[in-house]
Length: 190
Image 1 (cartoon, rainbow, N blue to C red):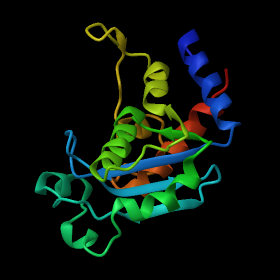
Image 2 (image 1 turned 90 degrees about the vertical axis):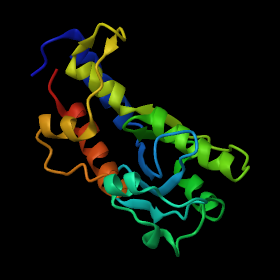
Image 3 (image 1 turned 180 degrees about the vertical axis):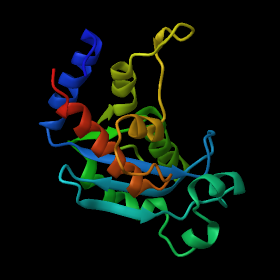
């Protein structure tokens, strides 16, 4: 149920994004710092079909802490292709499309960092849309310290909206949950 103008605006924006037939992206990484790189990437289309779902062999070993979260081990990526070999097959799914990402700042930074690791030219022409920020507005919990709406994890957003998909910390599952969340927001009556 809509209780504020901010919620209504969030729902209307979700609808605007959805009619543009976006793709959805999620990555899993070796960590959060400036040396982290992508170890898994998934992209799904508007209809939920999988466009990309692949492990990526990083240039450095995956730290144990990262493996504990995403359950991706060094053994799993041992035979995967490294980023420079994968990017040319990934970018057609993203370029010139709206790319819905839950926490786009992080995933775009990881794409750039992984490019930088291999001294690749940044040639991404997708238009990132941050669903985490949109959901924060919809949720409406104000953070007075940051003077922004408080971010909510993808897992908690999915639970609050009663979406029966897990936040599995694997890229394909998380793209499916991201898609379901945008569709849920767009379906709310205003």
